[in-house]
Length: 167
Image 1 (cartoon, rainbow, N blue to C red):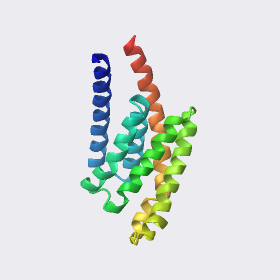
Image 2 (cartoon, rainbow, N blue to C red):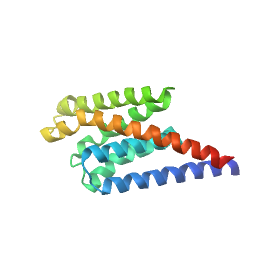
Image 3 (cartoon, rainbow, N blue to C red):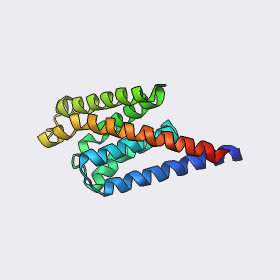
Image 4 (cartoon, rainbow, N blue to C red):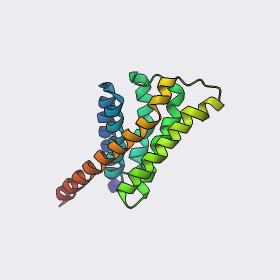
C-alpha cells in the first residue's frame, strides 16, 4: 500500500509540475504558433514521462486556462479543444512508433478542430467568428506537429536521464 501511494504521489507531483509549466507558458501570451507548439509539447512530455492520464489531465485543463488567461476568447470551443487534446494524447500513447503517433494524432486533432469550428458549432447555432475559424484550422496542424517533435525529443532526453538517475 505504501509503495502504491509513493508512486501515485510521484506521478501526481510530476503532472502538477508539468501543468504549472504549461500554465506559465499560457500566461506569457506569446503568438499562437509558439504557445500552441509548447502546449502540445507539454501534452507529449507529460504523456511520455508520466503516463496517459497525465497527458489527458493537462489536455483537459489547458483550454480552460486559455480562456481564463484571455488567450482564447471563445469559451464554446473548450469541450472541442479538450477532445482534440485527448485524441492527440491517445494516438501518441498507443502507437508504438511515436513519430507516426504524432503525425496521426496531429492530423486527427486538426481535423476534429476544423470540423468543430466549421460545422459542429454551427449545427448548434453558434456563430463562429472568422478569426476563430482561421486559428482552429491549419495552425492547429502546425502547432501539433511542431509540439510533437519537440515533445518526442524532450521525452527521449528525460527518459535517458531518468534511467540513469534510477541506477
